[in-house]
Amino acid sequence: MALFGGSRDINLFTTINRELMGDIITQQCSFYKYKLAETRVNIYGEAADGRYFKGPIIFNTLISRQDQEYSESDLGVDFKWGIEFRFLREDLVDANLVPEVGDVIMYNKGYYEVTTTNANQYIVGKNPDYPNEENPLNPGLENFGANFSIICNTIYTPGDQLGITRERL
Amino acid sequence: MAKQGRTPIPKSQEEISNSLITPYDELNRGNPNTNTKLNRGEQLSFKDDTTKPFSLGIQDIDEAIFYYFDHVIRPSVVQNGQRIAVPVKYGSPERWKDVQQDGYYRDSKGKIMAPLIMIRRNTITNDTFVSKLDANRLHNIRYIQKSFTKENTYDRFNILNNALPQKESYAIVVPDFVTITYNCIAYTYYVEQLNKIVEAINFAGNAYWGDPERYKFKTLINSFTTTSETETGDNRTVKANFDLTLKGYLIPNVLQKDLISPKKALSYSRVNFITEIVSNKI
Image 1 (cartoon, rainbow over the protein chains, first blue to last red):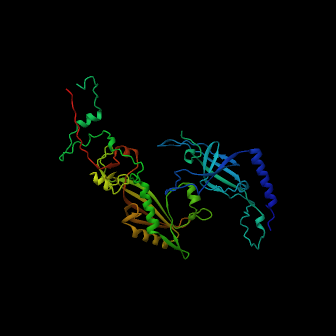
Image 2: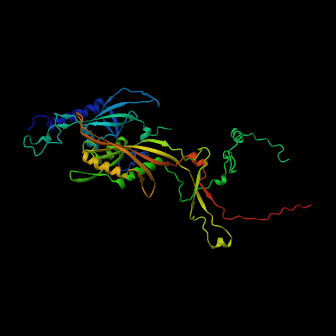
């Protein structure tokens, strides 16, 4: 039987983090999820005719911004901005949303495409989703530990391509 | 006398340039570069016409390749005692589509599972041995006659009136002939599986690929480069690279072609000779 990281501990961490993120830090973003059944793609794997989204769903988040980059190429001066969004996993579970590569996050009236997702922040190193039941060594491991956060690395994407807002007038 | 008082219209630079051309014209067809004036009589409407102006694009050619893989070659491998159809995908799709919609070739963590064939178009080379000659003035146009049109039915009443059946033709410009090359990668877990895929594709090489109901294009395969590698800290990979060379043609659906090319033509159904008398009272 495990000693630490039981459900009471996890509830405490969740409550403190929700309060911290929602009432004190108060950084927010909106999440757009692709409607796969409605968005049609061509043989090249492109939704050139338009795309459909579920959302936006607003979340409290921790945001880590990289510096804006203005790279120069033959096409001219371009713009790049990578942002890392850290979500409390419980918030996403309540909203019934699983962030995946390719989803879109809106922040500061800009759109950011998710390039990687990381869900490896386990409290006391245990993920209760995999308790190895029937577990003869340590039964009841599903009540210990937590998969606590999902971290999404994103890159700036022109709203023109997504078709959410009218950018090109 | 009628020209009195009219301001002379100066010749345009194009008219001056064309008048200076002395064409090599053994067949007495005239200077092909002079007819630049728009003839509205040649502009026939496609309204209520069930025939679409013919066009054939790059995507149609790409679809022919995919059709041939999916419906004719149908590559498959035997894995763990089960026959698995090898999915064929175009290289570098959009991220969301690749991860979320194409989940059938990924495991629960998102790792790409073998077998898989990836196709990507590399080059499009113009073959100029036959062409439309000049994109500013189309010279090579072919007409295809429509066998029956609802609007121009020919019945016994028309015979009584000495009318001839009006023939409707659609103009199609001579296409741009192109050679398109594709780079393909076949990815499997085992060399034995890869052998089967290479055998299947090699058998289909040097044939006309495409949907028999649509377009078919001569496709050539020269060689396969097979690799099986085991690198430190990475999974073992078994791959075959090969290039497809396709002999295709393009008739684009673009504004320039629409403006300069006749699209539709009607034959004369009846020629009336009438007598006109001009009388002058003295």
